[in-house]
Length: 342
Image (tube, rainbow, N blue to C red):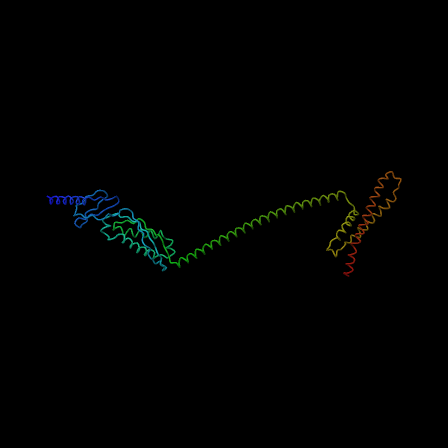
């Protein structure tokens, strides 16, 4: 009895285990390949699946989501024989679980090695400067080559990104010096441009100020000349309107002579010959006036007018005498200068 119980228990456990092995639950975005007697049978889709226990072999699940793989930095030689360390990031997705399992032994290792070799081919045709500035070009070329090569492996390469490009330290130092020199150059150029613009604006301002000053001086000179012209015209009209005789003109001429002799730098000046004639005319004029005033009778009814006239004549005589004396004093240096020149 106990033997039958043990045998029944063993059969129950075996049946339960067989049922469990016949049922396979596959998560979403996963796939599992099934082999029957060593031959590929089918691929289990997400959900509840049934297989034949002990005949069908179910392989581990394959992730169908997009995967990201970061490879270790790889040394790559550029066209100008410089070794740079390039770190890449690969985005791929399994589209055919059967091909990913049976067309390649390890698709991750295959993708890594293919990325390295393709990267060396692409970068080997570029110099360092172009490599540093052409990341998009490198990414596109890598993606094209990898997508074509991995298509038969059941993979689709979505993107390839260059994460880092590290040139040698000596090249970094040289690039830093070059960059610093470029910045200094741009700063010097901007400073020179600012100074040039400042000088241009200052020159333009000086030019405009000079033009305005010249226009103001010209307007002032024009107004001054117009005023002098009007004054001369009025004086000329007054002189001609009053019709002065030569005696008055001679008297005015004698008044101007002392002013000519007052100059500090006047060590030699010439008196025209008309001075003698002017002196003679003035003397004759006062000689005619003085006897006439002496002959005036006190019995004239207009004594007040006569007295005033005599006073005016006396003042005129004194002024004429002073003018003659000043002219004589001014003539002495001329005589001395002539005698010295002789």
